Length: 427
Image 1 (cartoon, rainbow, N blue to C red):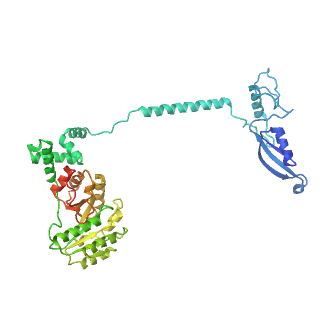
Image 2 (image 1 turned 135 degrees about the vertical axis):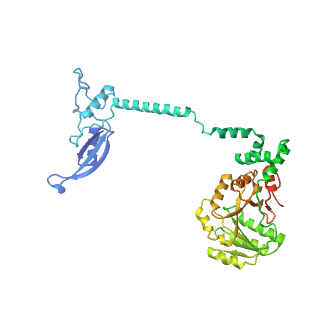
Image 3 (image 1 turned 120 degrees about the vertical axis):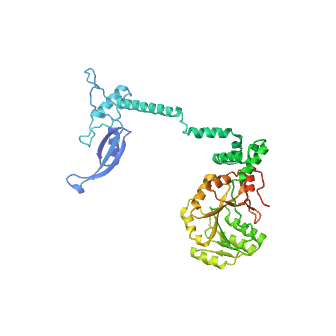
């Protein structure tokens, strides 16, 4: 780029000077008014214009005549604006730009005339080499086979053998994991004996019988209570704790009568207290709201004459260990509570394992599985029971109060697992 500074008395004359010396394609970089001379600030103002052009513009009558090479056969070429554009003229203009010193910038050579064709060609070649190298690498990555994950040979053999066993395949199709399916298959062979084979109907019946023998259940409300029982329902959000509380209360009153009280510490969820109060009004039961942990002892004392006290708790996310720990301040061991952990049968096994682990900071007496009517495969019931060895007390299978709750028995649990179309409601 050639830069030149012009001084003129006004803008019109200055633009004429720029056009005359640099051509019509010149760019005006800056303008300013100067006052100088002997009178200083009182002197006549002068307009200074800084202009530039991308390539050197030959000045008329003042063009340098120099050869392109050191050859003595070269002759000077006069560059005129109206000359035809030729490679020879372009080479001469480039040489002129390198030799010319920009006016107004003493000692600065005009080296920004343009890129050297040789250097530019070299850079393009390097870029092409880099692109070719990257293309080969990417192609190698795409074509290289992905190494399979390493699996212990013994486990691979066990899995292959298990998949070939029709008994294992049947159990896996009912939602049992590989470990529990293998246990049930061995237990069936040991307990049922040689008659474990036979038709598909016989095999399914034998497996159902064997699965039933693996379950442990409890029935905390299967008879009229002689001493007061205090049951709290804990669990994550959305599993149906409040509705299950109402089902337990209504079921006990329907079978045995007596006195039942309801307590809730769920003051976080919108309308949770109101929902429990509605159930209490329908069944004519007292409802206590406990806001602070220090109020729990007094609330229990006020209902010391009741046969059954049912405590509803706030749902807690298994990822929030602090809130679950906070629940321990309400449900102290000295209160003699049975904590029933409510689990949704629709959750995946890994999610249920996480929930149980987080709520294990409280002593868990029993599991209650809800939403069994919404789950097609219920093998997870046995998977979790085998993993944790915690008794199962109830199953809930709908929203109706008090109909949609079932006291868990080994026969019902086994039938639900092996016969997906078996009875899932109590109505």
